[in-house]
Length: 182
Image (cartoon, rainbow, N blue to C red):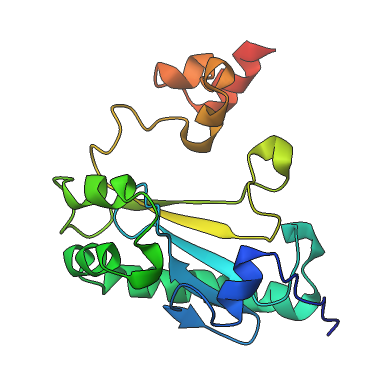
C-alpha cells in the first residue's frame, strides 16, 4: 500500500495523528469523528488516515476498508447519547475559542434524542463541489423526519434550480419522469 506523507498544515492529517478531535471509530485505513460544526445530531465524518484529496485516489486496501468505516461510524452514531455528546463538546478546551452556534442549535432540535430515520452520505470531491479542506472526508449526516420541509431530491438540492425532475415531483415513476424531460 502506498502512503502519502502527512501534510503538517492539513487539519485532517492532525486529526488522524490523534492531535485533534477524538476518534469514534478506526480501522486500518480510516478514522471516524463527530463533526464539531454539526448540521444534525450525529453528524460525523469518515476520514482516511493517509493524506489523500479525492475519493478517486483511494488505493485498493482503502477501498475495501471504506464501507467498514461507514458502517462502523453509523453504529456509533446510533448508540451515542447526542445530548451528552454536544454538552461535552461545548466544554472541550481546544474548541473554547471557536463559535459554538452549530452545537447550540443541534442541542435545541426537537429530534435530538431520536434515532435517525435516514442518512445522507456524501463527499464534496473538489473545490467546485464545495470542499473546504483538501483531505478526503466523507460526511455521514443523520436525517430525521421533519428536519427539512421537503427532503425529496436529497443531494440534488445542492443546485436548487435544477433539483426537481418534473414527473417524479407529481408521483410519476422515475422512468416516466426521465422520458418526459427529454
